[in-house]
Image (tube, rainbow, N blue to C red):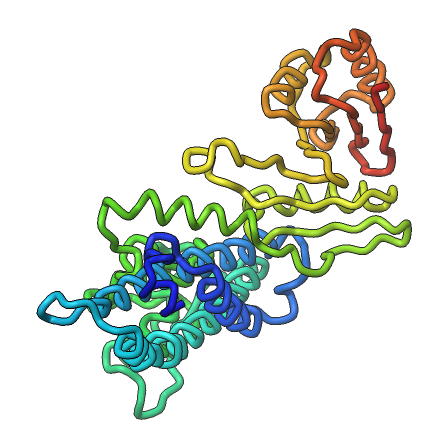
Length: 384
């Protein structure tokens, strides 16, 4: 990396994929350890939160990579403006390297682990809040506890109280505070929260954010660099590895999921993918790309084999609008999901066939798949 910076092959706005990926993998270990066994499970309770955590630390890793490269870039010339030799430049880079990639990274790893642990607990608290509607703030009680955090020890408030948007742990670097669920009455006082740093004034359980993207200094960069950094960031999503299949069907079908798939809809998209995998298909749930940054590279939700596919839950029975939209997006396979629809699969298949009678209409569409409301029936309508 130092060689490429010194030669001009690499600019800070290009980021560096290897450095970004290595940082992300390390922080991903932290959130995996903190979240626990449910980290790899796809279910309605935690899939969205886990995906948000992954995407937050990826964006953080990109921002950190930019800042690190920007710092190293200042070493290219000495105080008199004279270009440094590569050996002198390399020495300065290696001297600064432990600051970012050992010292800072250790604190960031611990924060990622603690935050993920509290994010998992928040989901558990939500499941049990009818029985235990309040939360109690706790410290570990040793001599290393910060004085401001000691003042919060024992404070009780309703789980839905907005105070937890500000003081839900962790509340600083290497903070070890936590909360427990209780049916004890809420405290009669409101604690002072003026000490809270903006970086930590978030509820990771609600937002899925380990690092506050509105206040952390890594995200502060010159306006002139913002667009180029975003382009590099979105491009790296497209190059990211899917890793091992998240689901392997007995029929031979598989489901792969990008760490950057849309968090809000991931669980429902994954459920549909499993249904199709059980029919022998292999699907990839693709990364969500910002169309304002990379408009030509915007991806569909799925890849089935090498064909793009999009899932539809709302439609008119003539399917004109549905297929026209798919055509504009260049989608090859349209998946009609009847999960929120009262029509029978038989009727929908009939109407789809009618809409596709004109062989010249919607030429990009090669197949339509219809899935019944109960997920037990799958009809594939392939065009000649």
